[in-house]
Every structure is written in C-alpha cells, then in structure tokens.
Length: 249
Image (cartoon, rainbow, N blue to C red; front, top):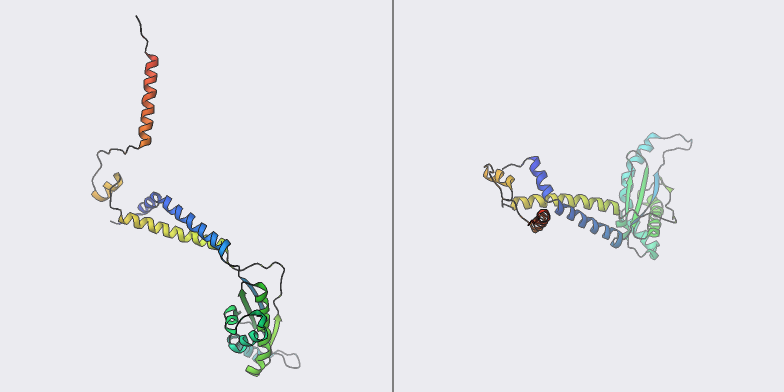
C-alpha cells in the first residue's frame, strides 16, 4: 500500500523522540571531537606572478602575455615535483619534513586568465606553513630558469607570521551542523525502516489501513496513571457524598 504525505508525517511524529535523541547524540559527538580531539590546522600562502611581457621600451607584448598565461598551468605542475620540494627539504632540515611530506602539504592554484600563482600550505604548526610556502616560492624562482630556460617568475608577496593566527580546520560549527543533518537523515530513515517492519495493529488507523473495515468500537488502554486518577476521583466522590448525608432520629 502506498503511503501518502500525511502517513510519512505521522510516522516521523511517532518516532520523534528517537530522531531527536539521535540528533543530540551525534551533535555531542561532533562537538567533543571538534573541540577536544582534532588538532587545529593552519594555512599560509604566498603569491607568484608570471610576467615577462614588456620589452625595453615598456610596451606590453600581447604574445608574451599569452605565453605567460599558457605557462601558468605548467608551472603549477613543476612546483609540485621533487625538483622543488626535495630541495626545500634539503635546505630546511630543521623542519623535519621530507620532500614528499612537503608535496602533500602544499597546493598550487590560479585564477583563470591571470598570471598569478598562489602557493598554499596546511599544517598543525603555523610557523611551519609560513616557512614552507616561502621556501617553495624562493626555490621555484631560483630553479625555473634552469628547468625552463626562462626567467619570467617573481614573488608577488610572501607569507608573514602573525601573532594570533586562526586555524582553517577543524570548523566545529560546520561539523556540528553536518552531524545534525546526517542525524536527521538517519533518524527519519530509521523511523521509516522500523515502521516498515512493524506489522502489528495498534489503533483505529492501522485497522482502517490494513483491514479496510470501519471501527465500530474500541477499548482504550488503561495505564497505571489512569488507575490512580480513577481511585482519586472515587475517593473524592465518596467523601463528598458522605459529607452531605445527615442522620435524623
């Protein structure tokens, strides 16, 4: 039997405590891991510009500009090679990083149609990120004339140490929000699954849905609380009746 929208709403409302409980548990777990167990990750970046598009008279050469733009993608790949990262590791033994580890730390990006390259690095130690991006930029600028027999790259700006850096990860608010969304999806899915496997008949709605017969009479379920209320009402009635009875001789 196909379920209508109101059936889904009824199922969700019936299992609302389960769904809310799942949301609370996963949100608490996400908060504990984000604030207590996940190490902060810092990021620094430096920018390079690929520019060799002026002749001695200062006139911009369009062909050279187009060449520089085409070389940007090539340079992005060269920066991530061992020819650059291994030399950075060799020059900075105090970092305790290998060329492969430096390669995994850095990323190189560019905006389409521009001659600017951005080298970024992420690490748990902020000062390490600053050192790595600056050293990668310096080594690349030094080595590119030998690798490509051109000298058209210069550093646009270097990464600088700041007093109170903000980590880029983890993001506790985002983690908690994602956990709530996942918990809601899991909770609704679990509620629908439990309803699918539950073939018992509990109320008039189930009788109408499965038997397709009208309900002529129903016997309500009596709880312990109902019994206590009934006893209290009976005691009150007897007390009231007793107070109104007078004995005459």
